[in-house]
Image (cartoon, rainbow over all chains, first blue to last red; front, side, top):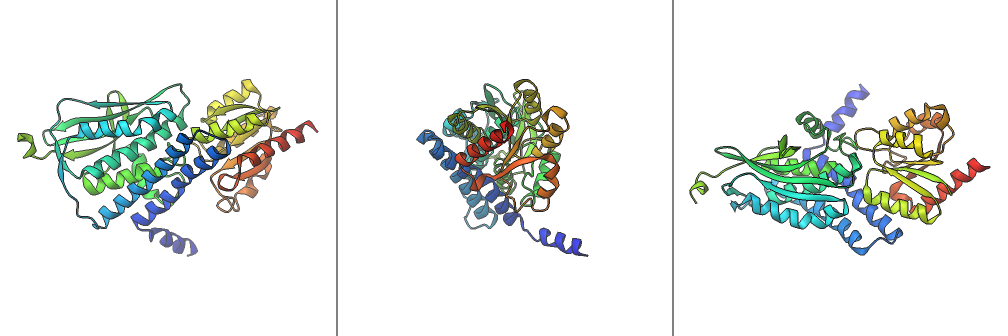
Length: 238
Length: 128
């Protein structure tokens, strides 16, 4: 009887509360990094990078919350996915460098612009990239790592875009489990260590609200997570 | 001076912890993967292990059970340095008694100086 009551308590967590719980767990990482940097007299830019990574996580959460609660009117505009990926790669390159990671942008073919909410796309891919950069280094020790920000046309009417790395264990099943464990487990994605899962889950929630949830995909010989964005029929003629 | 095997999933935390430990005169080997940590323990013969509990793929607890299953490594001190608070592990920590854990440090409330101090104490205890 008591067991039943306890499980009802957990079920009461709505998705945004669950995400907030996951976020609070993962936000500890940048704070711990800052604390240890100050103690170890690490360079100032390292401290700023950890601050930025924490702020990015908060901003992504706030954007997801606003979109989910329909607080902001979502302004759609024509967006060139390749340009967005290039900008993310540029912004994340100092962070990636700290984790010995090279970022490659790989857009297959000439892609039609999509009609979408540009901040959501940028935030989702950026937060996903930062999480996978950290996760990749936590999974296996190598001299250099690589992630691909990729996009390719999947059909006449849709483009797949996402982040691809050499991380093992990211499958649709893992994602489904992670969604159900959001806010209830300290490590909802077993392939990812502390400090990486909520980035993936926030990106997933943003993608679900805007287009389609993240799914396991492959691009350029690497595995990763991607979303499918519909192509605007009108923009195909622009 | 002690040979410290640091098993930590975040690179920045690992680099900073290594720096602090090296400053205290210790030699540090950093591993992210518990399986590789076991392999490196075989060759590098650590005097102390610092272990994060939440790691990618395989947990720290699983590592401890395997590590302690080898007779040669039963006396090597294990210091836990985790983002799980002792309150979260209430009830479970008692079950770790037989794993002979030297110290439990919650990352949020532990400084690197305290971690180094813990390593010093653990190595001193061995030499005495």
